[in-house]
Picture 1 (cartoon, rainbow, N blue to C red):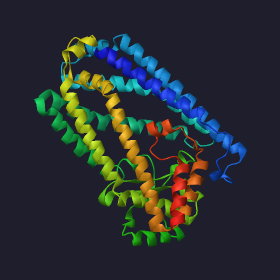
Picture 2 (cartoon, one colour; picture 1 turned 30 degrees about the vertical axis):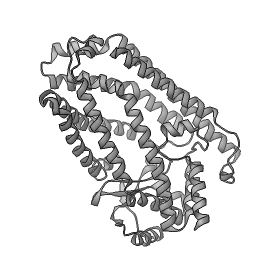
Picture 3 (cartoon, helix red, strand yellow; picture 1 turned 90 degrees about the horizontal axis):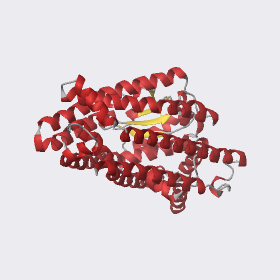
Picture 4 (cartoon, rainbow, N blue to C red; picture 1 turned 45 degrees about the horizontal axis):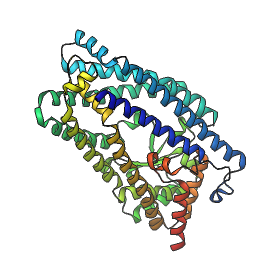
Length: 412
């Protein structure tokens, strides 16, 4: 039964994502939206649609390939073969579990690496976005592997130990410990982890800084955490975001954003990011994540070391690490439902942050102007299918945001 459920979930996820992508492509329109008259010419608008088609086709092929590899692995009793081999080599359940995840994780990384290389150096290069050189790409991969192995390994070791040693309340100890680690990492990431990949500099003196200081003072916002980031060393795409808590919080503006926008547009974007902080969006999303992880650990405890589950995958005996892996596959539909809630909240928060910026900076049309430029520069899809938005978008479609901002401007 368990094996059949896993296969059904994998197939359903693949066909649903393929259907959504196909609908998204079908929803393309050759007519430039009136909101972008003067921002797109016909050639560049066609280029944006070609970019979507290329990325979507590439994603579909990658998903199909990964599904095929996964199915071959499952039907060939890959879990049982690896488990039997490691049992013959390693006596410790903890080290066997860590080794099991290391082998699977390494295999997934190796299989996915050619796709990353092709996307970065072929697709992004073709459409004029890529600024990553081979040295930076290799450095990013090595750093990500080291950090993932260290942080992920420590968290995994903790989970394996708790479930092997703490009995029926292991799920609760895991939940509490993971929550503490999660909050610690969110707080520490802006000053320890993220600088390993990018260079962050405090905003320099000048017209932009003065305008931002005046706005921040009006909102009682501490300016010590406003930085520019060298996003241009990897891509021409621009962005801004808010991260961290307390004295370690940061508002980050990509250098590509600063170089392409007027002062009022940049302050409007910054006001949007400060709005996320003032309206406690990050805290609310973290809370949802913590609650969902609690539910996940409790459900995991119900199937931990399940004999029938182990037998379905032809394992010689159940184990904590195999229970984690199989449960992760079975939990996928529930995780997707939680993700839909998080995505809905995220889109709602974007509207709220837009309104905060419009109400407090009083230049809503400058924010709309910035959104238009960002969309054009990134060749964004201006007409996503509603299902694509529902299942995958963290931000509302840009035209919807522009309409809302224009309504706010009219009211003001």
